[in-house]
Image (cartoon, rainbow, N blue to C red; front, side, top):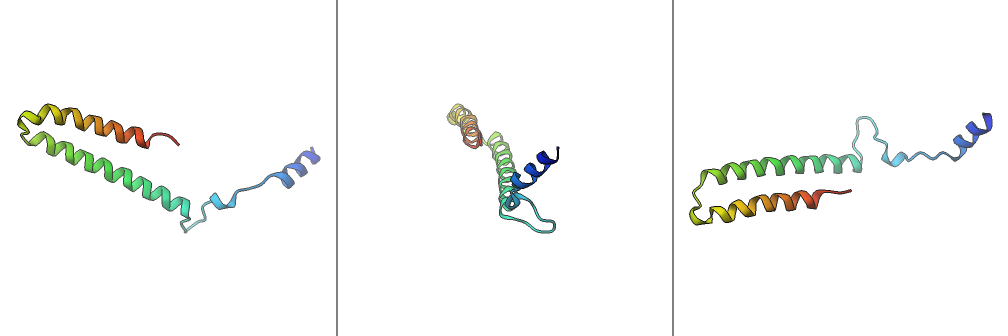
Length: 83
């Protein structure tokens, strides 16, 4: 058991670059905050746009807009999917 512990202590590496330090922001944390803010802003803008689209009279273009808006939303969702 002692040899196992010694092996783990000598060969186990810690990635200190990804560890967050208290009362500070590292680059990874700032990127996560920016991504979260962008997602929140995009959602708010999309809701505002959809609310606005339902209030205007588009006449003969209504079916075209009804086709384009969900397709655009799905395209953005697929673009952001993945790792």
